[in-house]
Length: 326
Image (cartoon, rainbow, N blue to C red; front, side, top):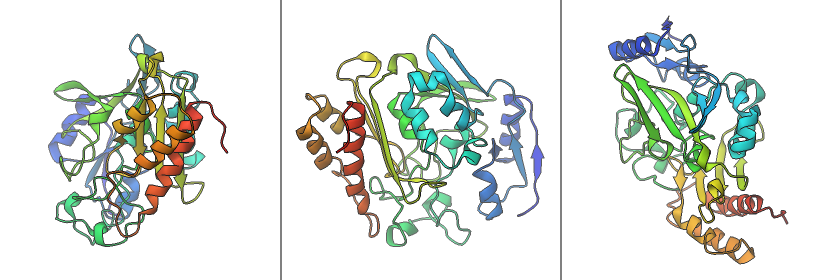
C-alpha cells in the first residue's frame, strides 16, 4: 500500500473544498476504499475522512418521512424500529448483506456509493471504458457475475444491495457540496454507462451524500425481497428482486426493482403493470416469470441469471402477497 495522508475536516464545506483542490477520495468506514488502495486500484496521496463531520449520522424523522444520515452504520439501519415498521424491505436486505462485522462498520452512504466489483476494473493491469480506457473486458472474458441488462458499453453490476430497495421506496438522496444542497430521486442517482462510463453515481466533484430520505407516503406492509448468492456469508447478490405492493396504501401502485443484473438498479414497469392487472394467482406469477427475462442480453457465462430471476420474482411476489412457498 502506498503511504497517504488523512485529512480530518469538521464540516461539509471543508471536506468539499479539500476534494475540489486535489480530487482526494472521501472515506466513510473505508470498507471499500481501503481495499482498492491495498490493491493499487486507487492510489491517492490523501484521503478525506468524513467521520468527524456532525449532522450526517443517525436516524431521524419528520413530516416528509425517515432520514438516514449517510454515516449511519448498516447494522443500525437494519435494527431500527422506524425502518423495520415502515420500510421492512430495506431492513431485510441489509440483514442479508456481508457479515455482522462488516455491517457494524459499513455506512449506508458508503454502501450506495461503492465502486463496482468487476475484477477487470479492480485490476491495475486492465484499461476499460470505466477507468479511462475503452471497451469492456468482461464482455468477452470472465463474466459470470456481470450484467445481463444494459451491458453494451460496460457490463458491471451495481454492487449495493440497498440501492434497488431505495429505488423501490422512492427514496431521495440528499447531497451537498460547497455550493449548497440538492436532492436527487434514487432512481436518477445511479448513473448508467451510456450516460457516463466513468461515473457510478450522480455526484460532482466536491459533493458528498449527506442524508437519505425514505418518504412517508411510500410505506407499505406488503413487500417481498429475494436474492441469490454463491455463498451465504460475505458475498454480493448474483441477482435480487424487490417487490412493493400498494405503496402507501394506494391500490395498484406497485414497484418491482431488479438488482445485481444491470449497471444500475433496474425498475421494471412492465412487471408492475402485470401485477396491477388483477389478483396475484398462479397464472399471474407465471406471466411474471415469462416476462422478467425480456430484454436481457446475457454474456457467455451469465445466462443463468435469467432463470435465477424467474425463481426470485416468484418468491418475492408470493411473499409480498402473503402466500406460502411451495
